[in-house]
Length: 147
Image (cartoon, rainbow, N blue to C red):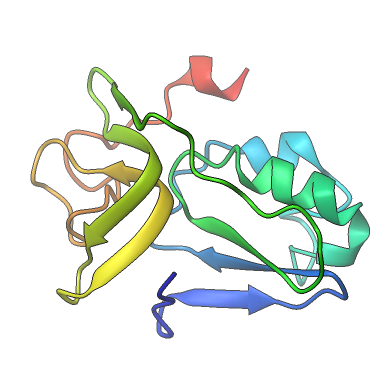
């Protein structure tokens, strides 16, 4: 998967690295609720990949609906596998969520291989095709997704 050096930061662990693209994060908080010892927004650095079992880190990162988080296993740790068949969920007032073996033409025009993405449905994003919350999706995630 291509990493956009200017927007994706990598956090190094012994068995798995985790990378984060702040431009794609929509604060669904699946990471923080799923593994607080690894993901803590009140701490710097806020991601400590060695704070949990590597397989748990991979599992929780896979819950991120936007693809802002990715894992990069260094060992035989289970890596995230794309769902089959591809899942498409259009959220009313929000982005189109995709899960699967995705090939997306990214903001720079290059092909990005993804397993998860939140694509803009209104055309109001500055990070096309990804939703950045600047258009009609400004209120997503809705309060019910934070439960």
